[in-house]
Amino acid sequence: MKQIFDQPVFLLGFGGVGRALARQIVASRDKLARRRGLRLMVIGVADSRGIAHTTHGFDDDALMRLVALKEAGAHFEPASLPALPANCIVVDTTATDATVPILLNSLRAGGGVVLANKLPLAGDLDWFDAISAARARWETTVGAAMPVIQTLNYLLDSGDEVQRIEGSLSGTLGFIAAQLEAGISFGDAVREAKQRGYTEPDPRQDLGGKDAARKALILARMLGYRLNLSDVQIESLYPAEMDALTVDEFLREADSLNARMAQRAAGLTRGGRKLRYAAVIERGACRVELTGVDPASKLGGIRTSDSIVVFTTRHYQDNPLAISGRGAGQEVTASGVLGDVVSLAGPMR
Image 1 (cartoon, rainbow, N blue to C red):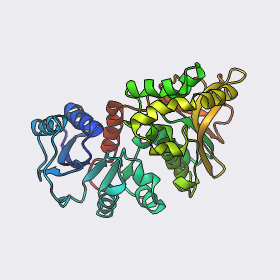
Image 2: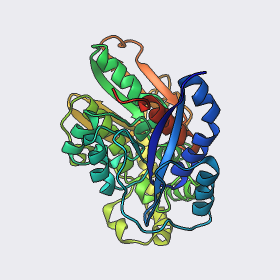
Image 3: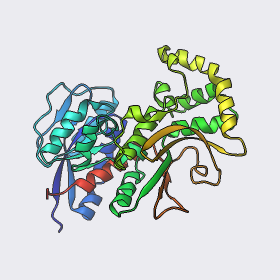
């Protein structure tokens, strides 16, 4: 019988993705034991207010009770972060850079880090340098479980020259662009996206373009571009003065942008081009913006609900390499996080 290795795991963040990950860890027990001789041992879970921790790991029933507790709206008891085993994998599914000291301490101790949180990689360049040079994975920071990071690493490791990366990195903005292309007013498109649950509670967090910009910045930094978020050209779909409005006020006032956005969409789609909110990374620069693309191109051919990243390289010139599929969602993101954890798991070497 294959010997089973117990891999300690600590979860930072227990929102939708963190809870989905816990359920998937439980569901994958038998398969991971057969395929990898591996048991993922969740020794702690932290939310924004507290920590639940056990030295020997939560059994499956206890872990599911923690999931149920959080889904009922409860919080964990306030506590300090416990000392973690040297080989512990810390998983960050939060949306804050307050976790960075924990991540760096874990890496310095020889542990591993798995990120769904973009902020540590898109924040201070020193953070990116420390994380990217260590035992870390961050596949889900750009395209949920799509193998974008893995593919880029493979291209770089193979000695290929990546000349250009372009992509549609936001399902929310993809939906908005498709609505505008179809002649739907901007205000109606935004309200529909929010009603369907495509946007953050405050849609401006998506419409401002910063989330897509952070994803693009991570890819740019992997190419060696020494850029900060302030260096990324970002097209916001609303003016900065609307930041002072409440969410309800913004949703009403979004109609004031209808004419401007209709004119912009009409100009970009002239000649049958498709409207996309796209990232472009090339020649040391990075930008995210509304753009019109050839409908026969890879960017022009995707479903509006999907994400895509296209790599033009020395070896993939005439027919660039494309990764596309579902690029958002709690379950698919959690599956990508689980894949990253498994790829790091095992005895320290």
